[in-house]
Image 1 (cartoon, protein in one colour):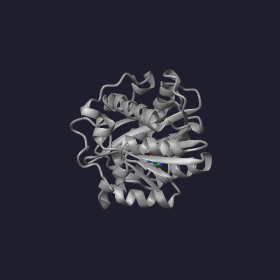
Image 2 (cartoon, helix red, strand yellow; image 1 turned 135 degrees about the vertical axis):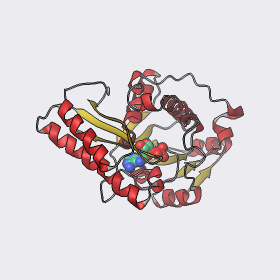
Image 3 (cartoon, helix red, strand yellow; image 1 turned 90 degrees about the horizontal axis):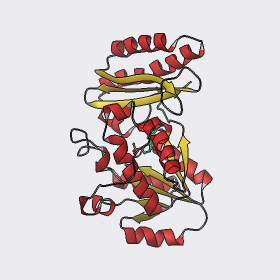
Image 4 (cartoon, protein in one colour; image 1 turned 60 degrees about the vertical axis):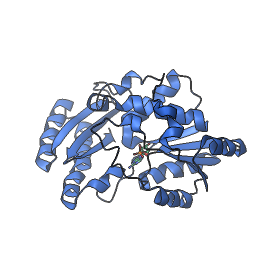
Amino acid sequence: MNILKTHDELNAYRGTVRGTLGLVPTMGALHDGHMALVKAAREQCDTVIASIFVNPAQFAPHEDLDTYPRTLEEDIKKLESAGCDAVWAPGVEEMYPGDNMDSDIVPAAVSLPLEGEHRPHFFAGVVNVVSRLFDQVKPDSAFFGEKDYQQLQVIKHMVKDYDIPVDVIGVPIVRDENGLALSSRNRYLSAEEYEVAVHLNRILFAMAEKLRQGETIQDVKAEALLELQKAGFDSIDYCAVRDAETLLHSIHHPLRILAAVKIGTTRLIDNVGV
Ligand code: AMP
C-alpha cells in the first residue's frame, strides 16, 4: 500500500491511477465503521484511497482536537488488510499552507439545524477540508458514513451546488453487538459510561417503531426525552425527527431520527431511518 504524505507524492501516485478512483475521507483511529466505507469503495471502484487527516478547522477551541486519538501505524495496517491501495495522510501544513484555513465553499442550508446549532463552526470546517481533499485526490466517487447523517447531506449538497464532479455515496452505520454506533470517540467511554451509551440506539430504534405504528412525532419525542434522561445521559443536545433529506420539520416519510447526547465529556451522535 502506498503511503502518501506530500502533494508531490500524491500527484505522482494519482498520475499512475487508471480506471475509477474511490476516496474514503477519515480522521483516523479507524474501526469497522471506516472499514465498511473502504469495502464499499473496493467493490465499486478500481482504485481506493483513504485519507487520514484530523482537521483542525472542524474543531472549536473547547473541543478535543489535541486529545483526538491518533493511531496512524495501526490505521495503516487495517487499511492494508482491507485492500486499500493508498493512504493520503497529509500534515496540517500540506492541507492549510501557512495555517490559512480560508475557504470559498459555504455549507448549504441543510447544515444549519441540529449539529449546526450545537457546533456552529463544524460544517464550515468539514466542507473546507472535503473540498480540498476532492481537489487534491480528484476521485470519481467518495464514500461517507450515514453515522454522520447530516454531514452526508451537507456534502451531497456541496457537490451539487458547486458542480463538483464527484459521486457522493452513503454507507449504512456499523454498530457493535449492543447496537452502539462505532465511533473513534467510543474509546473515551468508561465501562459504566458504555452501559449508558448503549441506551441511545435502543431509544432511537424504539422511536422509529412507534412512528411506524402511527404514534405522533410529538408524543414519541416527549417519551424519548424522558427515557434518555432516565438512562443517565448527562445532557441531550437534540433528539429530533426530521425529513430524511432536508432535515426540516416534517410529518411525511421518509423521516430520520437524529440525536446527540453527552456522557461526561464524551459526545455521541446517532440516527435511525423511519
Ligand atoms: P471520522 O473519522 O469519524 O471523521 O469518520 C470518517 C468517515 O467514517 C465518515 O464518513 C463517517 O461517517 C464514517 N463512519 C464513522 N463511524 C461510522 C460507523 N459506525 N458506521 C459507518 N460509517 C462510519
